[in-house]
Image: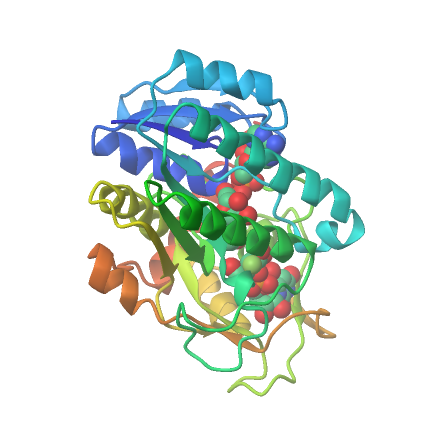
Length: 337
Ligand code: NAD
Ligand code: UFG
């Protein structure tokens, strides 16, 4: 089976490519390298001993995307490509609407034109907004909290409309909780540009000495230690979830939606403690005010994915921190040496 992986040089996609290649899928990557480097693709090839066809192409260039569909005969698409920084999306919403929405529309037009109607889409727990009830099930109300979240919600809505109009599509909406960690080899991992926005990449930079201290955004939440609680999921477990979703699409399920999380919440302080154990040093931190827009608690009910995909996250918080640290310490500058 030949799979088009959009955004295939990025963090989650590179780990997914490893799992796809291990299962003998043929992988074709489309990425404009806006937030990634080609080296990640070479690392995946080295790890798996298999080749990836790579097109450095922008989804905004519909003609170029069409040419790829003409040249290759895809069986399915996993659509990771998109911009993902919440704060940036508030500053430049049009950039996010153009890149994420127009890019997706171009992709869907090509899929429709070439009769490729199996799609796995990278959605996010952000579509639940500030959920009132924990754990969050797939039936919880949907709400966009910021322009980034709005692009995810609009794309989900577009896909529901497309499926309603033509039920020969098979679509899996995967709502990720908080992906962290790296492949156990330490050869691929998360390599954000500039100062990281997310907690674990930030901690990793402090641990490696590139940043001086961790900023804990609020310790006055209504949680056991006062810091925010999230459902962190090991990126390799998440990657395996995509292989399970591709398998599911072969049975023509129509449009299906799954939370991919562990169902367990950890606080910011839990993560710092586990990271300290992983890297073997104390990590300095300060308590800052809450970050606007942050929820106190967010964790999944991932039992639907277990029932219907036979998937469950296996790796715990210790492995998540150890694997993140292995990647960061082996690659202090990320992919660029
Ligand atoms: P990433 O930035 O590492 O990967 C995204 C890739 O898409 C990058 O390689 C980038 O160069 C590429 N890209 C962006 N716009 C493009 C375009 N117009 N044409 C071609 N390529 C383009 O991010 P990631 O963390 O691997 O996230 C992958 C997907 O998962 C994204 O859609 C993101 O919104 C979603 N997601 C991520 C998280 C998270 O915390 N990492 C959580 C929920 C959902
Ligand atoms: N936090 C800090 N210090 C930091 C960064 C984060 O204390 O430097 C805290 C936050 O307040 C929060 C927790 O750590 O309590 C996790 O924050 P992240 O920024 O790592 O992750 P978020 O839960 O805010 O958001 C992430 C993605 C979103 C996605 C969401 C759900 O950034 O795009 O997970 O999947 F929607």
